[in-house]
Amino acid sequence: MKQLQNVTLSSYAESAATLPPQVELVKSVEERYAYWRLRILYSMIFGYAAFYLVRQNQFSLAIPSLSAEFGYTKTQLGAIITIWSIVYGVGKFVNGYFSDRSNARYFMTIGLLGSALTCCILGFGTSLYFFGFFFAINAWFQSMGWPPVARLLAHWFSPAELGTKWGFTIISHQLGGAVITFIASWLILNYGWQSSFIVPSMIVVGIALFLFNRLRDTPESIGLPSIEQHHGLTDAAEEGEDEHLTPKALILRVMNNRLLWYVCLANMFFYVVRLGIVNWAPTFLRELKGASLMSSGWQVIGYDIAGMFGGIAAGWISDYFFKGRRGPVSVLYMTLLIVCLCCLWLVPAGNDLMSAFTMMVLGFLVYGPQVLAGVASADIASKKAVGMANGLTGTFAYLGSALSGICVGWIADHYGWNGGFMFFVISALLSTFFFSLTWGYRSKVLEELHEDLI
Image 1 (tube, rainbow, N blue to C red):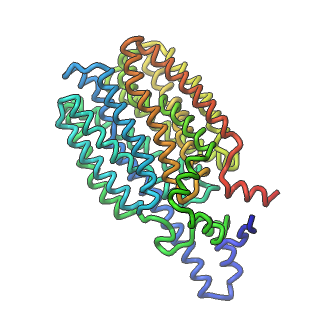
Image 2: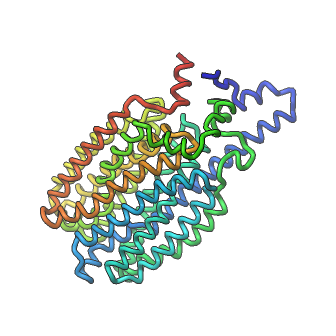
Image 3: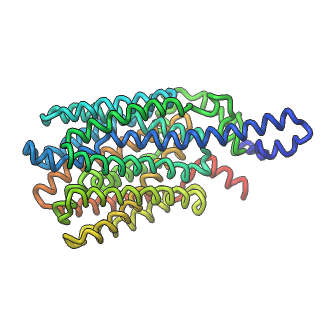
């Protein structure tokens, strides 16, 4: 391998103390990078949290009301969740490909505005087919949200810190999920289930305008060096190797990577659990544990809040204790997750305090593998294909989510929630197995740096 660049911009600044113009230039790059990295990070967190305000969370909370008002069964409503998941999963791969070739600022904003419009329309529905059709369109616009975030993360943060920064960005899921759970629960109780779709949509239009103002695409697009050059991890010649690859060659590189397929399969079975809990918690907490609507809503909020810390901790541990290896941390989290699922299953009905505590621990553990699956796909892929690789893992994730919709609904209808929890535990075991197959891998940049240090 070529000799790694061993003089960073900061060290160059020190050595160039006798050259004020150059020092000022370097200082300007340092200051601009610090400003833009912070701005991009909080914009991604706030912007992607807004996607959750117009997503499927309020539909999950509205399931009991829709069942009571229209007589829909869990299997029918689960089928709508499955349709959403399939469209979203396919959309993540397709939009991952296009996001790699688009400006993240425009791509993400369009997705957020489209999500708000379709969510608002859902508030005027009564027919099962109406819900299915517009929920599917909503899923497509939603699939435009994360691929540009993955692209921005890979371009603005180096592999040595990517797990931690990815973990911070993932708190957008919990922030958005907690906010919409509280707002939607309150709106449903006071103004009916329709308001839980219409009101958040209006709020999100304003957030989309804020997002468009804040975001920029890559460091190079505003005259800065790449993040790897800035941190001294590579040089321009090495970075240029991927520039000559055709789109077809990039697709083949992604599709032929055995490790990426392991991550995809692990993510698929993991999402049976993750989305199964998100979609069905308000229902199984009421039916199996005897919780009220507000109590189940607060338990889901606790689950999301704990998840913020779980995701950040997983990314940080993989960066600093395992030096960029995501597999060991994923296996640890999944093992503890299986134990926690069994605990939630066995909590006696009516014990809201114990049930809420178990949901919080479960939330902490669920969001670790979610962070690490995304980071692992970015580690494995070229920066030119990070959106596509992340989209592929997302496609498999939402195949798992599709199973968590209609399959869990069918199992709950025919075998009760004991059967549903058995399905969750088996899925978690399979996810743990496939994560274990990536145990020793880390990004190419970090592996080469490690070899040079040895």
